[in-house]
Length: 160
Image (cartoon, rainbow, N blue to C red):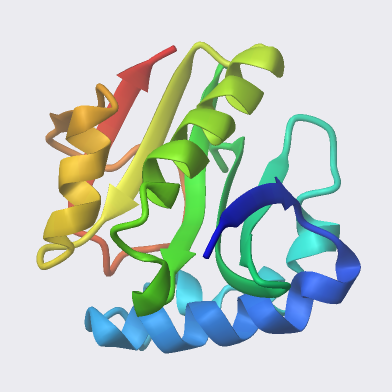
């Protein structure tokens, strides 16, 4: 089975909302302080249509099975973006799609003029952290910006 990554479209919103709401609890990321409660979860295509925003979906056999993107860091320096809402269903993991999604998101960030990319995650997301570190992200000691995701406890930054 082959897969491909493409920009999100309005018809993908319901699938991405389902994916986010299925994957986050798998890692204990539910309740207040997590992205699962962000209002944009239900309208990702609109949320990422603004300038300097990008969101992509992973599709296999016509079905959306993951997504990820970037946007300016809320409450942060305008030269810093945030890697946001990169989630994959279990059947999408281990295909190399995470690395491809990361590369595409970082290329979009560079094209939008960002100089650094920040991300937040939480203990227990070991595979994700390996991808971040393999992509050149380094751990930092404290959160940046004002994401509202107080439930996250691990922070990374990458110089673009």
